[in-house]
Image (cartoon, rainbow, N blue to C red; front, side, top):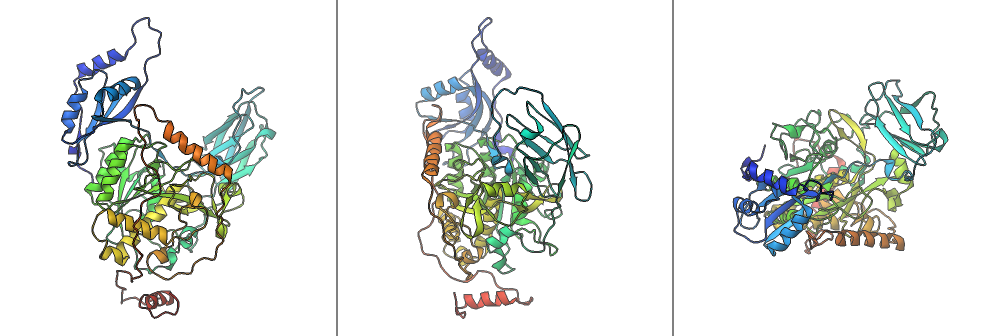
Length: 608
């Protein structure tokens, strides 16, 4: 289902005007001064009553602005937006001359909260001039069955440099490390695209005169539920609880609907491309694993499954070079299609007032935004850090991966939590964090039609998004007091998720804790007996504060204000303990667990 293109009016500036703009930016002949840097900006009127056409005409009066596109206003509360290219110094001058009548801010690049490997904990190569001969090695990645593994990312870390590459159809990759010797290579990291566990070796034995063969363990799909689903007690909820009637948007890199478990997804938009169903391809392989966690069709053969398979998933495909203006288009699509919950796997360091405005509007219309905290090991990214958004960090569980895997390297450098959980080094953290969820060694769907072991806060956000859909579909609150699509609906959902979570660590590292599906849906569940480590080292606190200071005071003078940061705002009303809203299917035999759950709902169980 593609959004209407009428909202996007192309610039009416003439070719002569653009040519004169380029000429104005060009340095005179013989002028050796460095030309002014030109960047992409978003510009919107600060007051109501201005159309997109009027905004474009106003901006065309300035000779050094190239209007790329305009986004027409949605209603009287949300202004039109022009995306432009302009020299940075001209943007500063325009802001000053506008005297507050225009909102002018950099159109920042968004980056995917990409799946993290052990590279974030491997020793960093020193930045120095390499002396001596280069080390040239051939690496070949094989399966235990003796077949080559294609498109595996291989990275070598030396004392002075690092290098990486992808294996070819024969499983080979030739790598050159400047100024290194075989015994100075600190580690090798192998990340296959799908089908195998990754490999991490400290001080590997390498031979420059031979083919160095490394063997990967196959990824076997267990019949049991993946550890993440069990940790969130998604195995404790009745089988009928599948998210029916809830609309979810996945704002990510696209979804490979060629995957046999994802063929039922038929709604989406490609933010940049008008090609039919281009959103159903995922060359990056970032959105497909998240989509699988939300809506993969169930299979009895193994535990890989979507936790809200009956929900209606809409794919909002962002390009690899996504900007904040692309996120605005995705949020507008969500509003136009009455999305209930949106899952975002992209972010940036600094905030955007115009994006925040769209998020606030979406919240007013009852749409909840759940975002990955980020994988940069720093402060929580925007928009996850917004008080209108639920920020989700990642946790792992000891024993859920082999000892020679990249996940083992993450665990070795991780922050230990209660119950065998840990915070991986890549996961962003800070006071804005709302929840943590499984994000290490997650078995997930991968494009075009396979499975992979993935890590990252995007996976954690997908787990929470699926649970949010189950709550909206089957919790009695959203059939009565909070049925209306408004702000209170969002804050009640966030409250349920946070107030029923299991604390496992310090709030700056894990937020309110690990979501508990059984408790969130009103089913009695056993509280884990955990000893929560609440101490955060002074050094960690100083580092977090320093990172926040850099974000707040590092902005250029074209954006002289900062957006509020903090955990998601929640409802302050007491939680109800009423039964689930759906009726059990009388045509199936209920399990012992489901009978006990029904007794608990009716007040007949001894323990609640």
